Image (cartoon, rainbow, N blue to C red; front, top):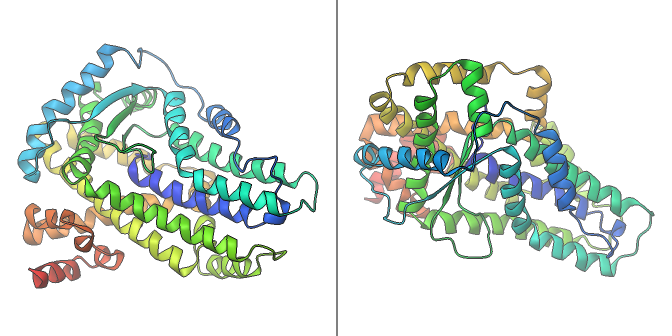
Length: 389
């Protein structure tokens, strides 16, 4: 099962942006009459893909929301005691929703992300002639369908999500916690899980993400800056190649990267873009690994059935069909899933060697974050932090 949260969303944004800009690179096909993305189509495809699940409660009712709010409030003390950090008084807002509502919320976030790409698409469209009628519409359909399918696929699997409004227009004072009740109830029914404890299990992981971003608000700016820097490098590359009939350098690079085993979404990235992706991957590993570690440490004392729930959910995640595994590989989502495992190994190693307070130093600032190499070799990060001290 995929717990689709910050890591998946940020990774999807990076990969989807790369895919969209690959289409933009065929700028001679552009027509100023058309937009790069048809967001209505994205949402329509995602909703069609999300499927159906049994409904046994009103997701947006005050009662459902208050139950999760009480869980978050109840978990604050054990999380604060273990991590030695405390959530600011503003806290986080809680929304209980179904798959469709989750799709709508994330489509809105994607629209913010793609604003600079859309602007460049229109700019180039005014300068370049259409050489093949109908290709602008096909390009729009291809990119819109790709993102719609990804969102629809994830909407069937996401249970909870900490939403920090990546690259939103307005400054964000607090994050939002989403609970997709439709999926939560489906898993409870399928695996026969105790509802109260399973929902507490989900809330525990999301509450830890809230601690990370609300206690250390610079993380939000760092992530936004890195995402924007990544997008800027791709936009610059497309502008430099404007006027050439075929972006041969990008084609050669894509073939090179595919031969080296990278996913389709990674294959179009330049070395500089891969560097930004590496920074994001290292951050995601830390965030998800830290959250999993805290969930395991606190959950075992707060929930009698914690080990049973973890075992059953992990077992379900391994039971994927070959077609689903292929989908994950082609879209790059399998790489995001690996970040949970690598990040958890990193945090577990450092906590065992130096304690949770030492791990918390990673949140002191950008220079303290582990690199991807240090995630794979925790002792190197420990040595660097001790040398700096």
